[in-house]
Image 1 (cartoon, helix red, strand yellow):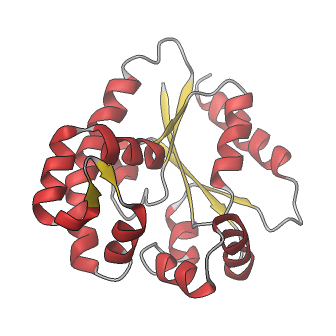
Image 2: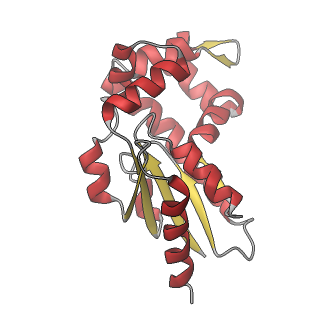
Length: 195
């Protein structure tokens, strides 16, 4: 089984690309969704974060706005939160992976695949790229937020050039190239590696 990482900057369209791979029958592990799930349901993580950042929870419910205001403005806080969550996501990924019987390859979708070094545990990587201005506009519209807030979040991610350099494949999603042919080409290349 080939383990594929899929990443991209905020607003690049990595979830849409994941959905196309899913339609092709490829199992997807959504690391970011799993991290959110862990933040809300894993008592060990909740207790650790509460002891470090007491204001981030209301009962056992994460206060997303409060968490965002901390981690997107304080690098040390972001590193601390990541050091609590990332090992758990890694653990959940390997539990999920053990259940993927008889599949040719799987995809692990993660926003900070390179930044967290999670890519080192995978066989190949795909980056979804869209120009920064396009990404900003998408996120402002999607999240009903401000340009400044999006730029603040972008600062915590590797830049586009860095992701393109590290990735084995890049899918371009500016709206001028169709996604399906790009996905199919990578899909077939991965399957050919197994033959």
